[in-house]
Length: 189
Image 1 (cartoon, one colour):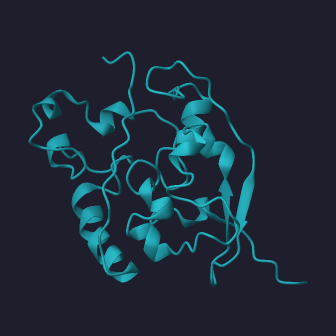
Image 2 (image 1 turned 180 degrees about the vertical axis):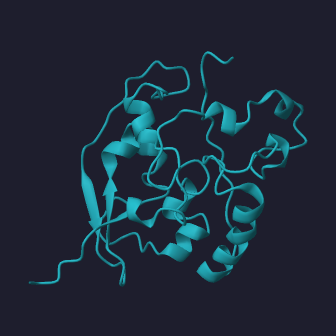
């Protein structure tokens, strides 16, 4: 039916007073709309999904996500695994809008250890730079200095730091914690 898929990044912010508010706000979305727009949950008309502008006349020609993403590789929570989608050739992100530049990737992991009782967080630059140029995140979202980004889950739920993309166009931080919290804490033993 469709020979190519264009992925358009759409951002909208979770606005709330805290993590509890964000979780309470998310619960009806999960019940009413399926688990996430990338999952194989309930089909919602694109104009009612809370992501697309229902007043825009072009919304009528958009392919429903459940149809567009059918057959895409998924993670253990059933969410589209975009890195695997790139590796398996489902999509081919461009370095720029016109496709004139070449992509520059960076294979560097950063481990965040201030994670409370949760396992530490591994931030893999490679999976992000397969998609995006460094200037998408630096310096506007993340300052390139160790300790300069006081990231907390509450911030992510409110659309800051990782939450600029995660929960909107990338896997939601509320449905598969182990995608980020993947490094066991050093117990000193």
